[in-house]
Length: 399
Image (cartoon, rainbow, N blue to C red; front, side):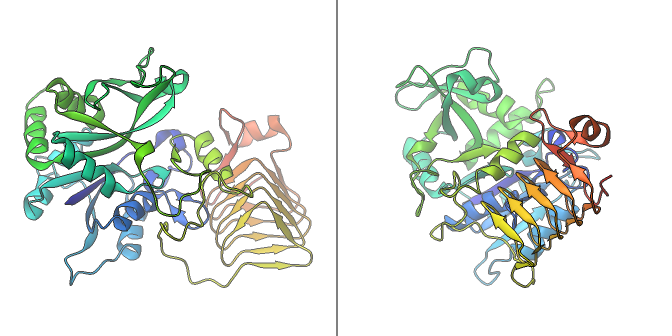
């Protein structure tokens, strides 16, 4: 097995969180980066030869992988970031398929029987080994992970039309009239962007695609439809995946956090009493490196309710509610933080108010400042999502 993680996307819809970093490097859930979820799933499943293909603004992503994800070289295990190497000429990757084609030296070096190709920017738990087993049993050239979504909401996804045996008959990008699954007319299989390939089949498809000047060289737009046209693609139903330690409430959870609102909503899924997505599952941990910081501290009557608070943070005489507070955050006396996501290093001054906001790393909210109180003033000063979330980029000083 060889794992390839596609982590080269710009993440334009997450701006300003992606102004200085690649989308998979965006912090999430107090302790993690988005890439930690796919890497945890692969490593927990026993896949230990993993290449992470990077491209745009990749420094923080490369550093995180290099310093956090260290496996045993004695056992031949590795997780390595692979930048665009321009092996086929002085050009960037032109698509996700081209990214793999330009990196085929990785495949030749390992000579695997099967290749797992997963995206790097979704929040979920999954046991990829079960999907690989289903792929091997099917004899298909590619298996595509599909998650069941309401048909009325499926137009924003790549949609899979499959027969009752799981053979994909059509693969449609954001169709106006999504197909439905064989056993439910109100449900559609949406592609999760996770694929398992038989190596020879993938190599042949990539070479053919590279020779096609009309192709966008995209996995979902070009490579997968090629397999579908040949009757060599199957769907893997994510509902069939059994993750150890999963609860009924978070079983089958998967979120594409491609927009600011989706990113915010995924954080809010973490902080309820019975969380929609449970980070506390010890049987299938989300792994990362924890900074060398002391425990969180609450002083002078500071409180946090319905919230997660990271190591090294200090809540001093202030109120935090329904929020995710990352590591090394200080919320000072008399301030109020509600329904917000504060990334590492944020400082909230005395008497300040922060509501329904995302504050990137090292943002400073001065004494007495307010965010999420005056909508017109916020619109003049900050980025506001379609859902009304106020977002401040890295190291911004609020007004």
